[in-house]
Image 1 (cartoon, one colour):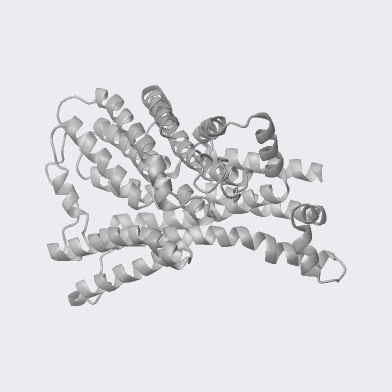
Image 2: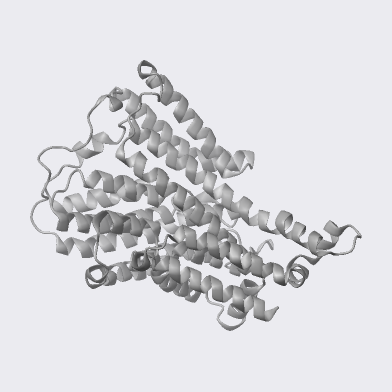
Amino acid sequence: MLLMTLIIVAVLVSGFLLMSTEQLHHVNRAAVAMVCGVIVWVIYLLRGQEYVQLMHSGEYLEFLNGAASTSASLKTFVAEHVITRYIGEACSVILFLIATNTIVEVLHNNGVFDSLIDWLRMRNSRTFLWVISLLTFAISANVDNFTTVVLMMSIITQIVRNHHQRVIYACTIMIAACMGGCFTAIGDMTSVMLWVRGVITPSAYAAGLFLPAFSSTCVFNLLIAQKLHGRVELFSVLSRYNGDDSSLAAWQKVLLLVLGIAGLWFIPSFHVITKLPPFLGALSVLALVWAVEGLCNLERNGNVLMVQRHYFRTTEFIGMRLILYFLGITLCIGALAECGALDYVGTWLERNVSNVYIYGGIVGVLSAVMDNVPLMMTGMNLFSLDEVAGSTSPFVQNGIYWQLLSFCCACGGCLLFIGTLAGQAVLEVERIRFKWYIRHYLWRALLAWLVGIGVFWLTH
């Protein structure tokens, strides 16, 4: 069994390295994740009897109901009672993200954000930096950071003409989106995973991470503002599409915006009141926004005549790749947990390290060179939720470990921008050179992270 466990670990480490270096070999990370996910579960089945006895002996005996264990019964148990747990958790996150992303697309396709382009056309380069950063921070707290980055990049590419200035603002958007996304339960895929797992509650989580995330954003802005001088070079003519596809009245756009933002913030309350999964609340909000959007577009027969904007066309394919990638990663981490490797590492860390700040530092550094999504999943499965009443353990619900894990994954992913999907979106849009980013921005992002850790320590 030990040999098979080592093989599973080796396959996954190789796969994670391939995913992290997608920019070098151009192999789709979603394909790598899915292939690795299937391979490790096939390897798992080769010693399935021993793994099931190790992790699910009681459940398996109940499943057999007195019958003898056979190869067929073992495979059926693994398929129906082991793998489905991880797939069910992944689908809860995916459905939530699909609903929230679609809400943003509905708003964008109806021209709700077009007024931002006019409002953001300002000349002072440093003022523009702070405005675009704080706006990104606020939007990312309500919508996942990847969607926020795509939205904000589509806006600044229509405002800023100078490529050098646009790259600086793009890096600011990446940092602000990751920091804004990590301090709310609905702002990032990793925080949504924590919420779905039940280790955090939205209000306590946001209260614990707001100051560290906001401090890191402000520090990075202060450092990067030194590279900005003079005025913003603007496009003289707006390049956005001004046809009939955004012909809603101003009050209708405001109505859709209020419904969308208020609905997103209502999702945690929906979960608290009903105890139903968060994605059901997100789907209900989407249904409401769609219904109101249909009423506002009665003259155009609902969505039938809706012009497909560039934003919608690009994110549709990216979103599907993201879904498949997340499913593949879930299968990978699930196999790693089920073979007992994560339990062994978690026990060793508790005995020999027992310091959550060291855990966070390790995860942050690894997030700089590897994708933060698998690292977040690994960190979540290293330790079990402490449900002992009155416990002061960092692993209780809303304990500092879960908050620190999310914050360090977000900050670490920004260090080399390849560790987060938001950073890779910025890289693809602006074609930023890796060496150039390391020389000009790595130390700034690192210092912002360290300041955030210091604020986290002071407030906890």
